[in-house]
Image (cartoon, rainbow, N blue to C red; front, top):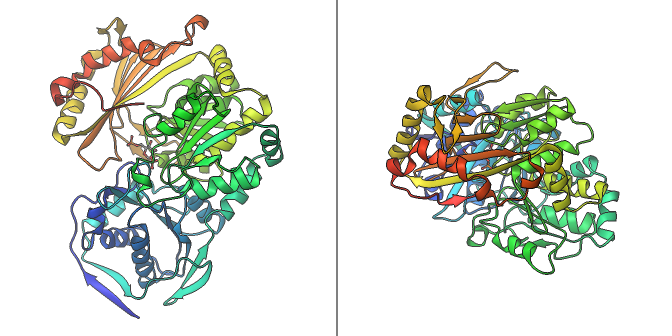
Length: 536
Ligand code: G16
């Protein structure tokens, strides 16, 4: 086995987005692309000598090949050991847990999340730090700087490590420990939830459907729900992970989880439905005839949390959780989009619940959002209250009011056109306050920036906010996770507190805000797009 130093050149555009580097799979498969990025990560963290890492991914196409490259590079860079999920599989929260449990120096997570998989689809790689959370902005900047200065990478010439067999092996001087991907994560969940109570729920005839979307959570959900908690076999649907996720987008929302939506709308619908995404960090919650928006899900979990210390949400997430926090007398933090921004608050113990409009909910047990944790949290609320999802939502809205909420996505726009929308919005900010659109008066308009209260870091340009008094808001932001052109996200929100108006169709409830957003941003004029591609 020989160690090679391979000469290379910087590859333009290896700048991580909201969550690591996401590109077309073929980009990652191109000569040196993956190797350059891995070496840049290693250089940015001061080398890999004597360090220990977790490596695993969501099982998408190229996961297996990429892992072998990362192992050979870690060994060639002097790493002492790696923990790898069997067959290269680890959900993102399970990887975060392994990093924390074993005091590792970090982890390489191979996933493009909810994006489709396949040779012509998407791939991704992100580095997580010793706290188990995604690389912070400053580390991400250092990685990018390395990608632009790289002249060589180190790699072993070696046979593939057999990742099918649990146990220890060596790659040069580096120990490779192949672990069952589910066991440690399931053990963690058992410390967080009252499994007896949840077993009682299912023993009493409670039925649920969990859509694993042919992605990583299949084995986790089968083990937890069917084997540990006694839910009937077949509770987990689409439970076999596939490299192309069965051809769909493993994106747990009403658009991509249509099969589950149909089950929940059917005559014999189970009591509860849930889904998770490609790498198991996102979740969708649905009851009989009651889809729960991610923003509302966060608020309900906050309301029923027995020991809430503090909460946080990303800026575009609705303010539903803010009012719960106010009622409970705990702090509520507003951070930029990206789970990495919750890390310092969780590490400092300021919060123990956080979430995002993009289907992420999590807590301080790991440093990633956690799909199955969210599902078990909801099951726990249902078990302790004895109420249906619909009843829980109705009760919540009666008490706190309802934040009607929708996100309109304009996908794969020319980057120039998307930038033009944002630039024009930025330019219009000073004059917006006081103007009226669709009967709504702008009381504040700004571009969101964040000062981390713990590490003092400053993050600018995190979305344009146009606020209409205490009740309505529209946010414009470019996504940082797409792989084709730009995706413009328009987040619409309106608070309704009239008890007689809590059951409106969302589009109707948001009609005026939607009209105001169109007038303010002139998306059609800048992009030629008359309507969003996806509404969630
Ligand atoms: C990632 C981040 C989330 C973010 C989401 C969407 O999630 O971890 O914090 O909300 O992307 O980001 P954007 O709006 O920039 O596309 P995931 O599940 O894709 O890793």
